[in-house]
Length: 179
Image (cartoon, helix red, strand yellow):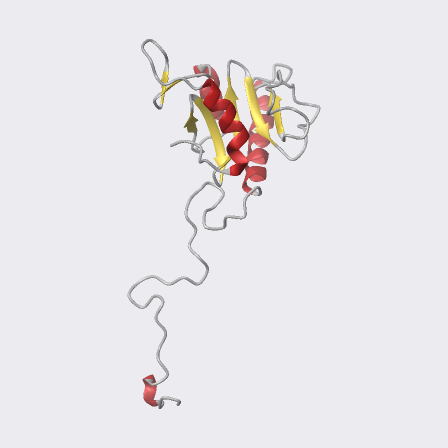
């Protein structure tokens, strides 16, 4: 599964597409593409967002909410997070990834290891940051047919079974038809 082609994803997809290399001999394969993220960082992302589906996109692992990219594990030591504002000063920032991290683009680079924090604190802070990024990404679409994890949502009041969508006619129950 890959990140969907949505307008909110176009800048990221354009950048990833430029770097993407179809799987070749000797390369680390990642869903048909050469892996462009260190395997340790892929594992770190999975540890920070357990049970969240990772979308392999042009050789990069991506987390998305409602199909909108929220987090990307980049290279050897960068987590790109999509947020409404810059992360707190307590978090160690990573090297920028232009043009995504240019001012006003809504993407920020953070260090996935947070060497200044104890391991448990680093895990907690980064997990919280990722949840915040996923929540923010979910607000960037008005599509209510899927939940924030991309699963279909049943419309309120929708009925299942044979009677779904059928209403009793006026002439049922002994009432005469109006003319």
